[in-house]
Length: 584
Figure 1 (cartoon, rainbow, N blue to C red):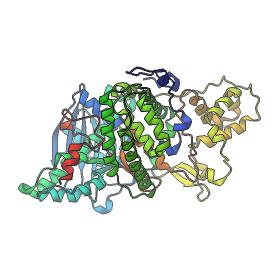
Figure 2 (cartoon, rainbow, N blue to C red):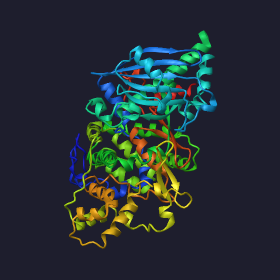
Figure 3 (cartoon, rainbow, N blue to C red):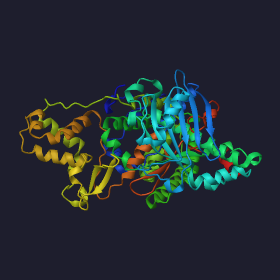
Figure 4 (cartoon, rainbow, N blue to C red):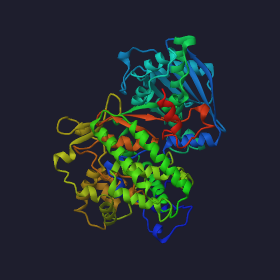
């Protein structure tokens, strides 16, 4: 699959394009790539979870559960199989009974309520025996290339016992408690791409079902959500016997799978610039295509209005204890209410309706509301934008080669164009270089330290492209402009990574965050939220500026429902589900 670049994407519009719509331009990297905006992204129909559920429904995947051998203490194992057109993938789940004192969201934990692997095919008893000795150990164990991912999850302390005891007594659980948490289990890591002996990306890269980014990880999480529902029901039935009731299907659907994500994920979008560019480019091109629709159909306007109403319900169910996030949720609810009022009197059919709405939002809504609107604009237009998913991945072995034949004059021109924002920063001020990214020796994962307070500068990782660009420009000043880049780098190899990024920006303009990633005011959670929005996460709940809890697959149809329920607009609570949940 070829990586896409900014100028090369062909615009596809199903309606007449007027002279006005032809002049509508895609948003520039200068506008999009600010952390405050990236940290306000919402899930969209291009998000990887929704790509997966659409594919599974379109291809008529089936599911089975050949093994569910778990005792009354919640100890045992289960196998959940997803049968695609060509291959079967099996989630092998090991359930454990651990003391509350061992339950932790931190990556350095050594015990979990459940541990998982996504197996390539259907496991034999010998496979399960082998994996039972390794998967529960996670990092301390080893798997093979028959295993595609390794993951673990803990029960929600607040919710698990409440749901089990309620169902065992013949009662449905309290909806307010469910809404405040959103999940029965939360994963603390989902490892793929060769970690701990699992299959390398190249082994599965040519499989259509995994062509879009992170599809095997999303499949693992999707099946984990089903396992958590089945396990809580199993425990309730064993406890309550004939008095136990089945969890209401609408209530069950409102429950997602939680996730705790920390700093380890934040540098991903800096370390994978081509992939990140492809994600952002696809999203921006999708928004651009919809804005260029000159005349909307009545049904498209109706879909937009309905999902706007459902978005407000979702925002009302979004809970957080983080002061900054509380403010953003309040702003979002105000924005959506204002947007509702506006569209009630607005013509959403003629005269480039979506571009008019987009431009109105620029002056009327906060960044949070603007980005929520941008996601909503895509919803009626799967036929216009869904093909962009095919451009969001990169070849697993893609590399960016430095063109050493170009001159320093060429390099400087590119540098000034892509990094003008960085060159305007005074990097000698302590507050502009306050942080240091380094790798923890204990867990081999990224961490963020204070430059002035800790002796870690010698271990700094190259995760400040802006400052490095300024240092490169400073080194260029004393060199003749007609010198080749190759000659310059022979004398200054410390700038190789920056030269590579500068040349990369010529072809991949959305590859670089145009913000200071080592400033005293940096909020790493903005980087986390940006990436997680492409996964399809909702209801971000930061617990500090460095880690966040989220919900995945909330409102999604379960495997047995995929054939008969909406596999696309599920992130927005539907009216039937809302009405049913409100009666309990």
